[in-house]
Amino acid sequence: MARSDDELSERHYRKVLHEPLAPYVVNTYNTLTHLVQSLVLAAIFYVLTTLPPITLLIVCNLIICLTLVIFVWYIYLTTSQYFVIRASPFNTIIPVTLGFTQVALALNIDQPIYIFTFFLIPVFIIFLGQIVDNILKDSKPMAFEIWSEHFRELGTQFAQDMFDEYRRYQKVGLRNGILGIILIGLLTLFNYFFPLNLTIKGYISFIAVILIFVFMMNNSDMNDHLNKSEKLKKYGYKW
Image (tube, rainbow, N blue to C red; front, side):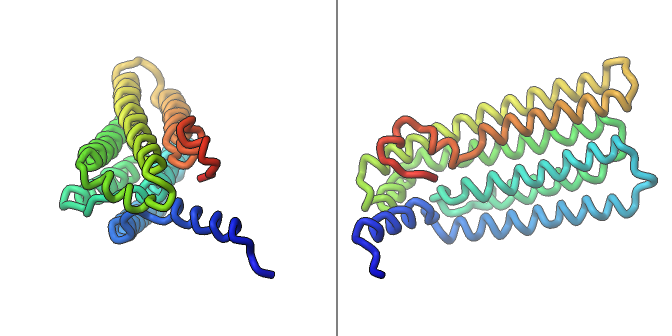
């Protein structure tokens, strides 16, 4: 049974919406991210095979490490579709350095809690560096030119509205990154200075870090951001 013109048009528009704006950049970034995060997972499993008897606190720290891998992987996979500028050496340094700090975090899951949470700080700082770099690159005229070319069949206004929402999403990510650094910093200071049993502080830190990740995941979903946009609702598309 042949599809109607409307069905074909809808399928075509959805294809445009879900295709990466710069396939080479996206494929390169995702390949590098997969490689680096796989090494982080390998480090986590290595630590598990070399640790003394595993305690509940170590399990909590392990969950944090795995949650961080999921968080980083998900953010890259959902936002790299909109990367439009060719990667620079800095863009290679960021994922690799991020992976290095995640490995350092994994290797310290059995250390005093203030040491463990301290290694979360550079993770957030490096992630913030990625956001700032994207914001600076997307401020160049070439960025919007690529957006306009990609979405030309959906109209110039749609391209502009999409670009504006992506830029707003970046600012939300910047705010979340700064907030994450502050909260993890305060948590580290609490763990170091507050006179409380280390195990209890470990459980408190676990709950606090998971809540921070939940908050950031809920505010870092690019597709959810686009679906909630008042500017884009009038077009009737779903991401």
